[in-house]
Length: 599
Image 1 (spheres, helix red, strand yellow):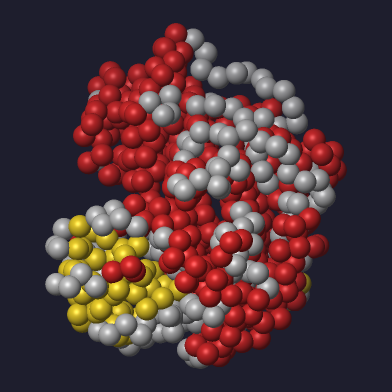
Image 2 (cartoon, rainbow, N blue to C red):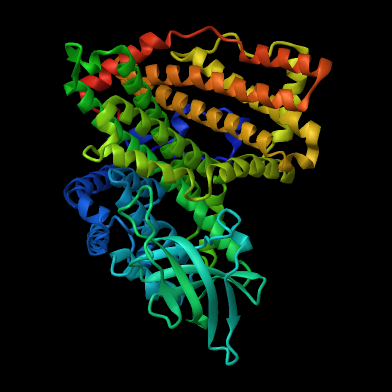
């Protein structure tokens, strides 16, 4: 891996990957890690190996004293404070460092969930919305692990529909405190957390947030949930029965709790994406190790073509996921560098800088969680019958992975967020999407839609990315022309467009990283990432074409349908790729290494 530090990068508009091309050197990837990033990665890796893994069984049996002890050790190593300002006991290292740690701690999903709940949604509401007094009181103790944080938004009747909560708050007659009543469900860390960010409607309609300590009168915790997976993390309901919360523990402004809720969930999504990549990398290493020693029909199963194809696909997905995570957090860190930390509203500025990439964060969450599901499922398949019993850790990894498509907003909600947010930005003029669609419509109706040849070692792949973007714009234009403002109610179409957007971002990101590696390390050093990129792009374009056909069939009919399908065929035209031989080369490499091995 290159030891070069990250090069300066210009701030990029969120979602602009659909309508703009970026030079490879402008995106951040693991090849750009600084010495500081590598040191924090090594620290997290050693902590996971030496502290977390030996204690898995205790945490699986709900020994929360161990969980607290590990959170304290993580705090002492600085692993819980990289996103906390130095003034409050943090390291303030940025989002890349936060992703690096999340990635490395994901060897065991139970503790990764505990740590993520504490350092992310449990601590960041205070970082971005707390008063000076609140920050001084709580952040140093959260950073060190002395206090454990939790986030209480969901309710039994309002999981994804968070603003429809039933919890209520009222100000006491003497004005000294609020009284909270209601119940929150599925609260990570609830069994042992000390400080909860709780959402309730003040006076029945003003959705607001409150900092609630475990010891406040009227606060109690229900029984542990018996879960399918992540059994090594605590999940309980909390009960508020005239819970007395001091007036100074109102977080943010009255009636503005939705700003806190949605921004914090957005922050959690990029970290969840990083954890999915780390979990997949760990599962691949286990699958390779097993395949190299398990024999059938007189040879190890790592020699069988179908097993090798699975390993190659898993490694390719990890390469793409890793590229997505670090490109996105690199964008966020670049935007955060422009914030003036000395101003009173620096917290609001930082949130605005991060919100710029809400689409990209939702993509990480959806793509990463579905990628991990594929990897752990294939790992079980490689283990065969042994993968279905608790003796082997792939069984636990399979169960643990399932929650990720529900966490931090379901994947269905996030797909609607992706398309909805892009359309909203286009309507407000923040993203020049309508102009790009108009240009494409004129182009496809008047002449050739794609460049015949593009320069460089991945010229055909550059053309495929161009095709993906054009198909996405074409479909979005056809759908919005049909439904106008009413497209928000067409969830199936919104989700199909989101799938195109997701794959386009993944394709371009993998391609740019591969080009950058090729430029830095030459053809020999880039052989593996180039092969992975070519394989992924070939499959992704097929998925994009399928989604595009689904949308066009839903929005057009008759001659219009036939014309639009003909345009789509022209946009999707490509030569078939011999993915079998490329997968054989990828499998050779990862089996020889024994792991993913690129970063």
